[in-house]
Image (cartoon, rainbow, N blue to C red):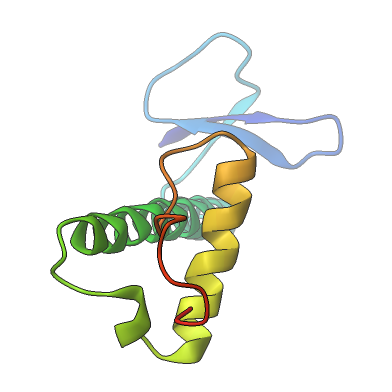
Length: 109
């Protein structure tokens, strides 16, 4: 049995394995609402993990470029443009050093 809390519209708001303040009822583990809740929460966690991994990959590419292991010009045009656009936005937000050094020759990008 799982302990639940519903919002004012009757939708699941919280699901826990133990009783908690504000709980409004219980449902069996195999109840369709619980299964849908678990799928939705899992999907949201996976989506957040995807966003986190994108940042890891960007940082890894930046590190490889900084170390000279790869060059931004080695990448396909579409990948290079996406990385440069994201780098520009991150730079504008005051995050991390730029993906490419400003002293690089123009035209190679």
